[in-house]
Image 1 (cartoon, one colour):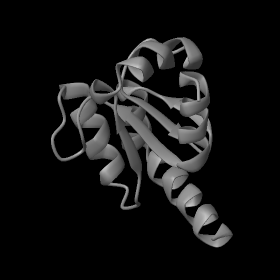
Image 2: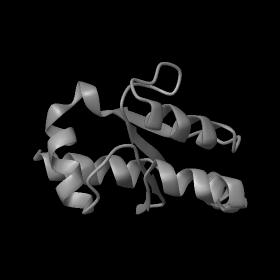
Image 3: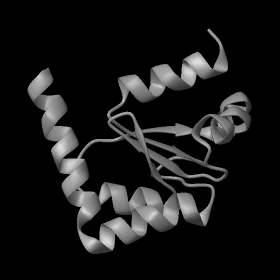
Length: 110
């Protein structure tokens, strides 16, 4: 499986997916910490990939997504954005709504 195929599989299999440095409980950068905290505060399960553990994904995803930085939040197969966008959406109440709707959609499909 190529790196692109692996990324596409991860995005397809995880309705709410954060590519970040470290983990939500032990982030390795301030931006990843802020993003994970905001997403966690939405109260739904989300998946994460620690890009520091996968240098091939770290190198390839910015080109694939046309988004140069991490973290990257993907919801329902679409790139939402990075830390600034995640926080802005959270403070506006948009992130909570999007995450709850996506979580509910996938609970219904199971």
